[in-house]
Image (cartoon, rainbow, N blue to C red):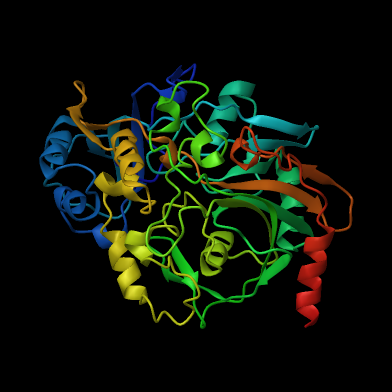
Length: 453
């Protein structure tokens, strides 16, 4: 799809009504539909042929497709068919009508934690983007809520969560409410707490990580602890630790008959059995549920700090990837002596769609093979209507990151909202452990004490 086009005024068709959702195999799906992307002529495009622009800047499809689309009018300028050799000039509006095939997302509903006349506090499912972007349009929080609440509902997200991250979000119902909450968040008068599921036994007590974070590749959205990065502080506290079984049943959990799942989370949940790193890590390492209080707000801060501490999020496709970071997974490497920034960027950029299931690279061999088969990849088929190459469904490891936005609260105590713990953070069947999280006093105290030091 030509996802890099900007929408603008032009001949864009009205949105399908009702929205083209349907549900199958535990996924929310969108029936393919026609959609027009519009973009004004950029300065660097002026005086160049239309086909040259698409060849150099829009590479989602073969050049032959674009030529045919220009000749048929699917790619038009100012609403007219102009052909591939048209010379673009200032003020031209380029439009591309395409047959969109959106990826499916989780069928889990958007939960409502609180609602009044100004806002809705929701529990966002993992794997669902907040806004339409890239390959996603109707399969986004904003569009799903519009479809559920009617055309008069205009959701305004007040905080941001990555597509793979689940948990609390604030959706304002009108502009003033969005502005009011936005000011609070910007002024740092709102505390945020997350919960994560990480590799190994996380240390006891409140752990404060003050390591600076540097964005080493804006294109890849890649960050790491580097001595010359921006100041960042996160407070961590282990909520629970669940050791691994002494022997591993490597058949995928969903394929096992009921009653054969064993007593550990590594055997209970899809993806958990895959969380066994190779190399120097021990087979009985298990995993921890960790509370996370970010004091600053750097991109990927929690994920990067957990990686640096040697306990990356168990199913993190970037920061728990041995093929990118090596056997130590970037632990304690603030000077980039184990892996240079250039090495990390090169390795990650080489990972194409056919390797996405390999992202968590410490999978047990048998489980790794299973998830490769379950991953989204090119199916080898094309759409009979538009000849677009089609993908298979995404696997579970591509729909979730074990990081959850658990709590938002006003620092002065005026309000607080907490979501339930996600299923992956609860005790595995046959084990005891916490099912709720206490207050933030100890985490806040640790953050303030560290500041004084």
